[in-house]
Amino acid sequence: MILKLCPYYRWLGSLCILLIALSNNAVADVVKPALIEISTHTQGHVDIEIRASIEALLTGINARYKNTKEAPNGDQYDQLRKLKSEDLSEKFNQFKAGFLKNLILKNEKNYAIKLKIKSIKIPEAGYTKVPRISLITLTAQLNRETESLQWYYPLKFGDNAVRLRQVNKVEGKWHWSEWQWLRKDQFSTPFSLSEIFTQRPLYKVISEYIVIGFEHIIPLGLDHILFILGIFLLNTQLKPLVQQITLFTLAHTITLGLSINGIISLPTNIVEPLIALSIAYVGIENIMMSQLNKIRLLVVFLFGLIHGMGFASALSDFNMPENTFITTLISFNVGVELGQLIVIALAYFSVALWFKNKYWYRSFIVIPSSLLISFVGLYWAMERLDLF
Image: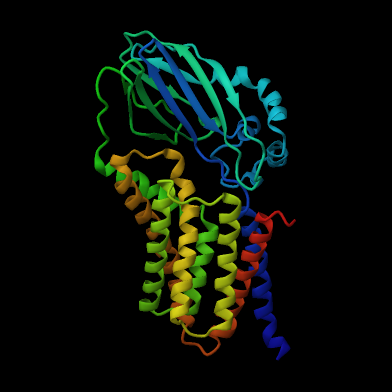
């Protein structure tokens, strides 16, 4: 009997090692795109606010690394995150000249406008499990005859999202353009300064936010993937799965919308551990229960509310204008839903389709996998609570 179980234990041990490796990826930082806001003033100057991780800039960690721990200088990045704001500012002072040299703001005549740093605001380290976002403000003189501007932020600094506004302080009016998300080493498309900005075609807005939502699940959302797999393991029948996924989607859509509008808010150091604990709970419940019941549906809905506040971090920084809010919210959730469905489909066709009717399916697949999911969820929760 022991010999027969040996292959099973080897498989379980291998899977455990794999999930521990994945857990290290999931608790690592993912460097967010820098957010760039360019304000042109009728008085004849331009201000540029850059919200970015100075720690990532100093260490050269950008979008190439989905996991900052994989970067050659990941340890240096972690050390910088712990520094007091004034100490980090001193280190950035040595980097300022090179930083400015790589940024370009040019007009329609391809003339580069000379930029200088106006101020740098670095928050205290705080909760070190999420990147610290600093505010770098640039300024420059701007000819009132300028008709358009283009922005360049090098890929070696990371992805960036940029928008522009025209400000008339005398009349108390301003107008924001839409965001441009630059994911390649490229200039933005020209921002017009001589007319009201035209909106992008609806299909471009929809497709962009579907991609953002999808990528928030695959490949970036390991914690959400494990939660979905936990839902899947208890019952592989289509109807119960659809019910649970629908409730989960409905719940996270509610809190995502409320969070973006600032109606509800929970600190990241509360939301992230709760998400991890929800993963652990679902795994434990799979072991304790053999069939789906109404309590499980309520649990999925409640945890969906929590996950929605986690999703909000992917969109809240963009300060979406009201006229695109519904479109972007729906598009983002469509992307999330597509990612969830792909996770379910892969799990079903790779495991459940072949083995769900086997007498050993629960003993050898459901219970061991749920144990591992719970283990990883608890590991993440302790890590996010700084317990080790």
